[in-house]
Length: 413
Image (cartoon, rainbow, N blue to C red; front, top):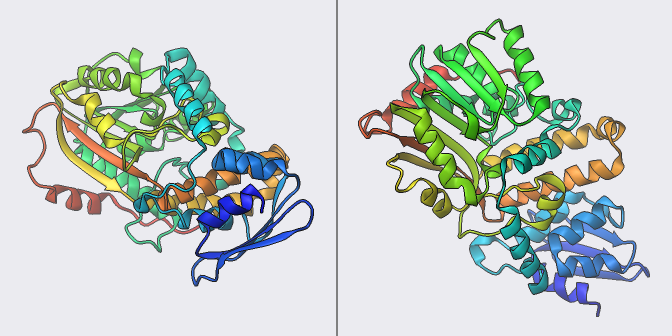
């Protein structure tokens, strides 16, 4: 028996997985399951199995990208779903963890990468967000919200769920007309433009992505609000001024644990005395860990999803009052499934922009992320902080009323 057969046999109990070895030998694993789709995969060479045993995520990802692991029945999302559904985070089994040498190397690399200084931050952001602009049009919603949506109804379209996310966050910010808002990591400008259009806020959005900056500025100009919604290419550490509100969505993952305290200290200094901030970030449901090797190498170099304890340690002692902490458990899985489906539907266009290897890399990234939120230990945190405990209402009732007033129905494209 090959080592990979034993390895997968320990993992796959539910669902049917057929492995075809390079010599044509077929190995059937698992058992029929009413939910999990049967999957057949073929290894083109013996190195595929060895790579997966050493580090399942990186080994499978690289082999799939290179065409050495081929899915003959189902697709990559079916394969990763089948495998990870057998290794639920709640079970504590961690059968898919990298080998001890791979974990040791990852731990050392994590300690080196965590010192995410300003120059490295800009380079890391450019690696992902300065990709061909057309790519994001093909799999995101019309507003280009590249972060977890908010599904008030699982049947909602991605467009509706992303607008509901904006309303959910805006309600937590409790913005009044004329307030100054800082959007740290503003993406393509959707949040900033929303807060201005819906609540009359004056917004400064900052980013380290030159491509995002161009789009955001163009959108503000097209909307005729460039004097009220400004965008700058600047690190949050260098922002000056005072703001009534600060919002940061999907940026904290790039800050690095070594800089969490500096991040929150800078936010505190930028807030007015009755200021409020809302942090929306991917996080770990368990203890601090390390970024998986595939994501760190190919998708988000320098990125790290924090445990709640790490976030709290970042702001404790800075006299910021935690006024609300919400955990979004499955919303990102639903968001990512929409992105995956749109990516697969636009395969020809994406391969024309890049190549087939890039397409396989992108689908592996999205499929793996789906499974991290459906079966792994990932979630989203929304953390509301204030400088004064009296600034916000003392119950959460105000959120529902404000949110309902902000929501709008967005037709499915």
